[in-house]
Image (cartoon, rainbow, N blue to C red):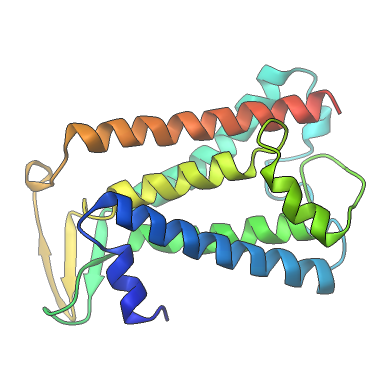
Length: 209
């Protein structure tokens, strides 16, 4: 269970504050998963299970990009659907979007993929420090592009729930009542562009490996 102060930050009225809170939380969970899986799990334990198959079989950047986008699209879809729901324990607390929960699953799953070298194509395993610092190579490593994009989607949609639950009481609102601004639309376009960029970078790295 997340502490109340963090839930308040992740449910802040300003999307920028929500984004920073969710991004920090994601990175902490992600790095913990990287470290623990590198130390305690066998190499390649998830290979071929997280990208829809062996990406080394594809022969073009476009094909691999599409395959990665389909996989990432599932993650985006789950976040969007979950964001239709929000809940809180009592009226004095802020609503917490259910769409934030998939982020923690993705953080752990992607952390294990990196920590155990379980990518969609076989790569030489590297030391733990190199795995972490390699994330900063934004021209060849897609992780941060995709992480920021997914977190931004969740942050923007955090106050867009249609089904609001307080304790055992549930209320529903119409889509027209949801606060959607031009800024929200722009941020969603930016988020999807980041995910697309990450898919292309990852695909190029795979095909040219």
